[in-house]
Length: 370
Length: 121
Image (cartoon, rainbow over all chains, first blue to last red; front, side, top):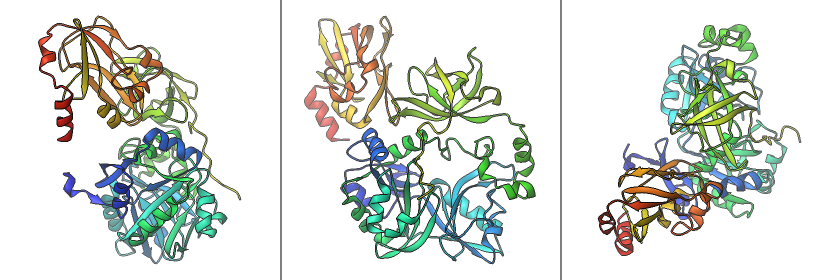
């Protein structure tokens, strides 16, 4: 894709004005970092509040007589049981139980389901969902909306100053309301492991909301570079890297994405494979690795056992700014997946010691009770 | 100091070239978190991989701006890779190379030419 084919989010001018370094990502010009750089932006988010433009992600409404029941044809989560005012993580599955995308589904109001999908996957997702739901429900892309994420331990205090209702929400709550003078959808969630919110607003209000939040000295703009290192430390898999069409939610350790009622009914795509995997028949599983020496092990690096035999591959990895050492997410055979297992990562032909550790790498700070 | 289009620099003293990356390259990389310097005795040809520098985001190769034999790697970068950002064109050097073809140095850009080159990027 050439640069002129790239789309701009409603916040493009704001990023450029802030001195962002813009890169192509998911078909958009996106800020990979601002003037402070990835390391400082990462640490700022862990200590204060970081503001992210995630408007490249797809926002859509699924409407119909029973949109949750219809949507369950292509996702594994229990969305019929999703209460009003809540959102739930799920995965869009292919016929083999492989992950086409991971997504968030919310009931912020009575207007069907509000779905947020990955930017790079959205066109394909909508086509698959629309096709599966033909005659029962419709998918409406909300092209004229922006999505902002405000993340970090000070995010709640910052947002409450503008939107008092935000303070009454807990992790995975969602709410449609008038905020910043426009119709907004809030959710108390994110992809950094920190407390925080995602804020959907009309595109023409995005820059005003963005700038309003940035007037608070606790808030700094944070680019995609830090978004990636933050989610890696939080042990959150990223589609296109840790997840793809060959990976099942069970291999990826996302068992919670297959709802209990759905397991009992066995009424989801790939149920035969996933049922076996739930019973323990697995050929690979996702692990978190602490790299004990040498260079960061990045996507594609091989993972070996102590004797040097290859047992898996790194699917994302890098230096963890909050920890001060490299970490990685990868897939290995189940025999090598127990916490504490000593492994090797192979970077540029050199073996370096690594160890399977618990997820998340950095404790999450979701607010589950207020 | 002379520069390559890949943003390495060299300073020659006698028949040994000290090699690093330019302030521009360090700024572009962002925060350096890991450096792999070459081992002493390694022979490199101009343009071959000499070292690896890693930011939070990505790993990047550093190419040998001149041919020769590595006589020293900057061991301090192992513990303090951030020196590459702080002092890219002095304390953040990567390696010293004993020149096998000193004429290569003359073909590199001087600072004025390098800055003119940067202006075209």
